[in-house]
Length: 502
Image 1 (tube, one colour):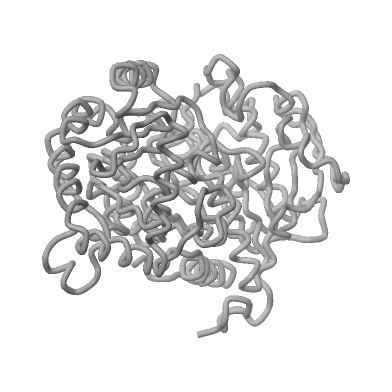
Image 2 (cartoon, rainbow, N blue to C red):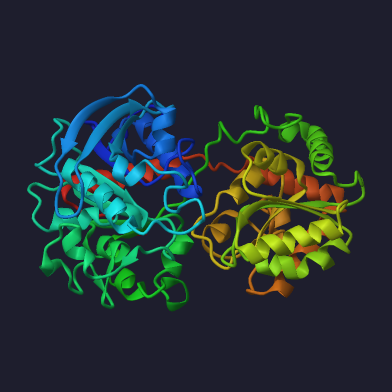
């Protein structure tokens, strides 16, 4: 097999790929997409791909990247204003293109919502402009000499690009659309078709129309040359009614072009042996040092230093998708095991209030931190005994991989990437050295509590727990294998051929 820095045998000349995304860590982040948008292009570059990253020029991004130059201008079209293309360098060395349009992106708040948490009313136009710019860069109309062979789109925010290329672009690049979460589809009113500069003929079942509305995501799923999603299990699940969110028929019809590729993680950033954000560094061979992080975490959060009590933790958006309403329901029983619970996250107001109230009632056993804190997130992964991810559905998930790498066995529901990455602590799996966490199947609070109770019992069996920790820390979740799979798909798309979807 080629080394991590060599070019794949299937691509003797560097493939040219434009990676379009609405967010990228550490510049702008609301979730796992930002981590993928940072790590995957960097992994592709290590494999010899000539990859460039396209990102909106949000206010916060421009404030961080002061060394930049204008390399192109985009004219106004329909209700999409003129914009500039800026070039700068990312921390990883991947060339970064910023779409500069102050009217759309120079705003307070987040990339998708205002400071009150409401969606920007012009999101269709804001991300229509991003999709159009990506399409222009992937066509003969590009103002740049560099032209991609493959345009890799991510989520609904860039999913209109295949439509722009399909309806009239000359010499279009091949397109790949990655679904990170099918629940978010970019649905807007039909009259925006003209405002976005799309032809009237595009508003049809074989185009951008979806039950009388304009759907960015459906357009991409319909018109992209290939589709990927972020785990093999999720690729299967979204072809069924339960998790297809109305698009299961289209996805099933295009299953020969649908690939399930598990996300990786940044194993340099998430490495307990070198992590500068944790209290004491450790490895699989020095797991006794992990205890220093538990003491530091308890001290920071005001939890009792109780050596005979396991500490469970959550770092997550607080939503029903993540199964955190189940956790709120069973939390009093969890604390009575006895156990402790540390939670970091934000989202649904009712869940925020519920967890905050519980922490006030049990200040020495439970901590709730609303919001996000990168340093605390790392300390939680290092200091907790077990990590909870009881998701109703989870396209991939990354914290379960971080947790295994940090010797913090995860408790997960068997869905999507969680099912693909965590091996249940069953006797056979313990015997063969593969067990790395606790997996439950039924979508219920009671099933979650059963898994938590199993984990608490196993924690008290020191030999079992040590085996689980070492098994998880031995797993390889880096990006190399997944990046090679993407390179293989790019090469076939660039050649106009097709791969098996398995």
